[in-house]
Length: 91
Image 1 (cartoon, rainbow, N blue to C red):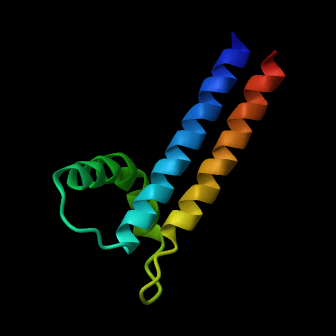
Image 2 (image 1 turned 90 degrees about the vertical axis):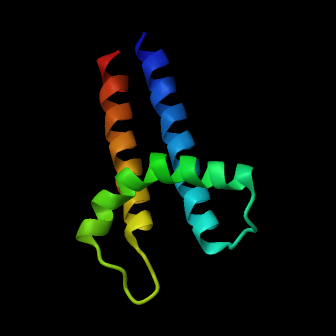
């Protein structure tokens, strides 16, 4: 039971990390407007922006650089490691 929960947590961590990275890449690259690209961009914005918004309120951009996604990924990794260790030690 616990190993299934840890596996789910690991999958969730990797999927959300990939979503954040895709959101960052899509914000750098100007793609031509397409209905599907617009839907993907909207989906990424709706799923990633609430989490990144927490860090954007605390960490202002430095010039043209927004460091909040880097901090958000580090915090996400730390929380994942802590939760995975706690669940693994429960077994």
